[in-house]
Length: 493
Image 1 (cartoon, one colour):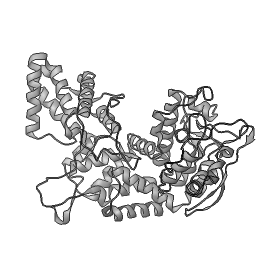
Image 2: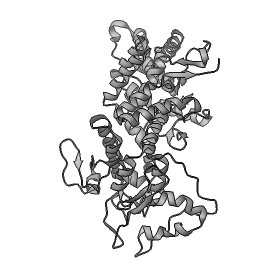
Image 3: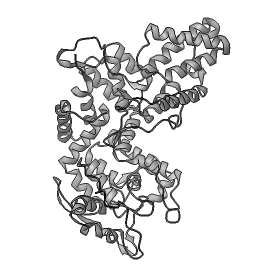
Image 4: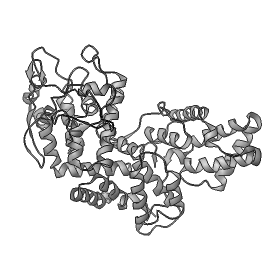
């Protein structure tokens, strides 16, 4: 079973209980699939985490606006009847399915005991505290009746479980009432029904949440939470700037996928973006159109590759890092994992030296011995292609008074060859079947919350081929929701 990630937990709390903010900040860090996507799937909850969930539940329940959650006429129906209505309505959203009688009765008993002493509202708040600590809220519970025999060990997910899988994939949050209604009426029992709801969810503004969550994790943008910059060199680096550049990437990806052509070449190479706040000055933007979409010079904005959030997430506090940027591109966009540096190699950037560019200071890696050269020949040139952008993602023409040298060679890919700068790199990657398949595979991993297994091989291949053939990211996301790995469960009888 997978436990909700911190992002999913916070969005469920916001959507179900109406409490927003960093309510999951006190929870333990998420586990990750191959260091990329959050998926708390492997380890049991430790005692200290139980306390974290309790603390979060108490804090959240104290912030509830019960008048918006509970519209029952107490004067007409009475406290007990209104509490039962609250338990049924909120419980259905929290559990992502209707509560059974024993669950409803337990919550009603809890309410009665607390309200008798403390009053009506404290009784409801205690019920919410209990719901927030229930495994039915905290986990993706996707199994059908465990006692039912499953032919061939594979069965279609039950409607409510499939509703949850759809909503957490596309919205990174719990299903809305319409999706739960569809599950309850049998609307998700067919592929056509799933297709209908998947399209509805993707068209909804909340789909931005899922798109943002995917790209932040895939591109490693969560590193910005703890990133720092030397203030003497980069006084512009503030929490407000970090928020702005993360929002820019989210807005850009959402616009391309849901409001524009929705293809990989546009995502990787579009010469426009959506900077806001302090991100405007960073991007050298003087004015913004009403729709927020800013057209830029072709070499200043190259899709995702030159988003300040990505460039800053893979840089050091006082300098860029061709290694970090190149490795991110190699592993996350080409799906070519690389080994860690040998234990006897100090993985620290070369010190800043007046008069020397980053490229000149990193030249030693090319001659540091066979064990280093083999990997750096695959990494460095990818990173050097992005050297027109400084450690906070700002475009520059020179470094240390010298013109930027962004030339290099793409190796061991299906689009090998010379390149010069981010635009040339984006053009090559846009033509790469490896990148196309990798992007589809990354979305597949995000959707099912785990790494693919041998049993997923056919499903992954079909999604990759569908994306390569049609080129639409939207269609590829829909294809994932109709794949066997998404709509079915595998179990031992």
